[in-house]
Length: 276
Image: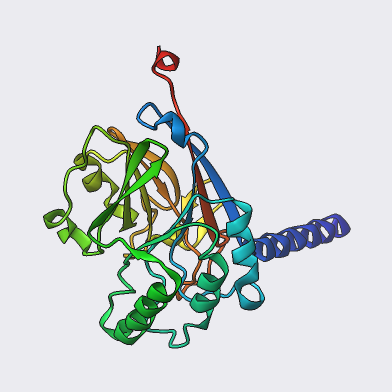
């Protein structure tokens, strides 16, 4: 009997070790989402958006080559950076320079700010980042709108600067004659943002709940809320959908069962007769 118990304990210990080791897997992964809407023009069928969020100067391979290769493998039509690219804890912005050098010619790049980008301790880093944006042709979309055209069709890309709950004083309602994509850093405000007529929100900030419990979800949000409603993935509310990136960088608490994530969203035009 003792031998059986010892054997069971060995197997249990081995299982725990494997569980923990797998949980700390830090390899970059790409998540692909297919988004279909009747408002998407046929000309935008297969249009691909790559989202980089919460970069925090994370290094992915030598000279960011792992991340650069992953971005290019998605064959993006545009690349969006949804905040927390820099922060006050990382003075050396070499990883960002390497990333921009590698992706700026893959597709047009757009950026909206996150809370760490605008932190008082990151003023110098923010200024350096803006200079890099000018060098590599990145469009700062804070409180701005861009029209994306394919042949005679167009969609609207709108960015809102990070302001916590006060963003409501600056966001405008979307023009319902177009398919509208909204970029805002903090996906935890999804419920509030869903009342402005945008079709698709691309967001981050939550870091996937930092520690993820298999089959349950994120344990802790960026504002220290346990088991946040919006941690990472795809969500719907009213007439709006959200793709919430788990991000790439680290928190004070190490990621657990929460690999750094690159997001690729592919748009599909839905014909009205398909709805019936």
